[in-house]
Amino acid sequence: MSNFWPILFIIAFFAWYLSYSATRLDRLHHRVETSWANLDGLLQKRAAIAIELAKSEVSDPASAMLLMASAHLAREANFRSRSSAESGLSAALGVFLESDSEFTGAIERELLNELRDLDEKIRMAIAMHVESVTRTRLVRRKLINRVFRLAGYAPEPVIYEFEADVL
Amino acid sequence: MALTKKRIGLVCPYGWDTPGGVQSHVNDLAQYLISAGHDVSVLAPTLSDENLPDFVVSAGRPISIPYNGAVARILFGPIAFARVRSWISQGDFDILHLHEPAIPSISLLACYAAEGPLVGTFHAAAKRQKVSFAVVPFLEPVIEKLTARIAVSEAARLTLTEHLETDAIVVPHGIYADRYRDGVAQSRWQGSTIGFMGRFEEPRKGLPILIAALPRIIANFPDTRIYIAGPGDVNGTLNEIAPILQERFQFLGRVSEAEKADFLSSVGVYVAPNTGGESFGIILAEALASGAKIVASNIPAFDSLLGKGAYGALFDSENSEDLAEKIISVFSNPVEAVQKSALGKEYAQAFDWKVVAEKIFDVYEMAMVGDRKVTLSSDARSWNRLLGRNS
Image 1 (spheres, rainbow over the protein chains, first blue to last red):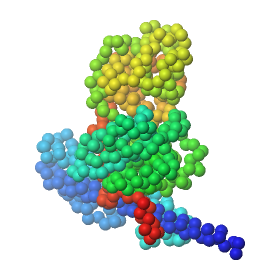
Image 2 (image 1 turned 180 degrees about the vertical axis):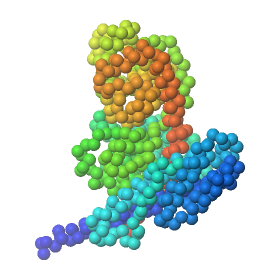
Image 3 (image 1 turned 60 degrees about the vertical axis):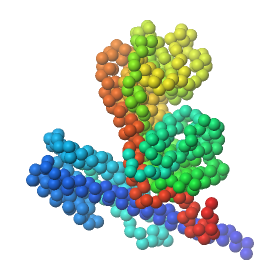
Image 4 (image 1 turned 90 degrees about the horizontal axis):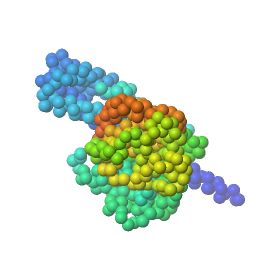
């Protein structure tokens, strides 16, 4: 019976450690969800601005078509094609912004300024998202988490191949 | 700035009563957020409860500990932890902003105790130490709770990626650039004068390097004078200076912001010979904003702040010979120095609180997306709920 207490202690500690690891993983998955929701919201906003720009008077028919098409693609893209669709929209907006000095209308300037602010925010959101995803994947790969399936049914978070610079 | 009023909790790890970069950053940020209409509470260690601004809550008396080349006044321990927990649970915060959460302090305790939207700002830039191998396994699970991380400079970001292998968004320290913009040049400080600012007693601020450079400068410009602004022991420092040089020194003590602006825009050259431990360089940013002609050491923080030499001259850190050479070249070629300082003045507007605080608030908004509030993490543990522990 002399071995009883140490063994009990080890079992108790192990149980605590399992619960602690599970909490940690759960928190990390939650963080990924938050950062994705945030990034998704900003990207949607950008697509909306792109559509507005396409409809405004500054865009010639060709760039209006390009903007419209890529904005719609970005909004309707599914999980897998999202990344390439957003990159497409970035490129379309980039082409549009190159001739930026020609826009003089107040509304257009407003839209462009909004777009610039948004670009800054998207950059930050991407950094936050990539960080949370890599951290979560790192912790998921730990032996104890894999053996005891502590991640449960939470899907493995995926990294989107966003371009380093959005616009 | 914001459509809705938020409850924001800031945690400052260092003693509120002692001057320092982090403290003044937290103070300015808190005041900016309050003026934007938010509810702000700052938790910080304090020496005495007198004269505290009403948004500061004391976490107890700080302990002095040598850290990162200076004496840090920080606080930890069970009593502090209990205060941190009660501050979090009573605060009902929408967001918690922790400063320097990777050192043993109330910021780390708050990060451990809280759950929900957390933002951490990393100020320090330090070389990787052997200790971090032992410490990182404990730190990692705590630091990874932060929803968003901010580094105050590229140097601080590198420190973070090296030590803890996580990335951060760079948002610089804020200054009130408009208060430094309109400094009036005063003739008593003009000429071949050298300005120095900061706690001159601390070796890492680099005053001895400037003193060692003086003989060569004086050989070229015999009427060189040195003005030193900042708190410290004047007589002790004077005793270490060669007697023939002593009369060229003048100590101005602590100066007000308006005086600082005049001082910086008057002196022939402003010198920042810091040897390290500096992560952003608030005083240097202020010098930039006031349009001072600058010579600074090429430590990473200053190198990036001065745009690799575009806004001021850089000298090889801890090399007095090089420092003397750079100062002489500013004195003998003022036109180029003035051009650089004009560029720097323009550039420094990006550090104005209006810009910086907006960026920090953008990060807050991103962290708050889920609409969760900050809670104590122990409330979320199922066994504590079962046992009915609600402390």
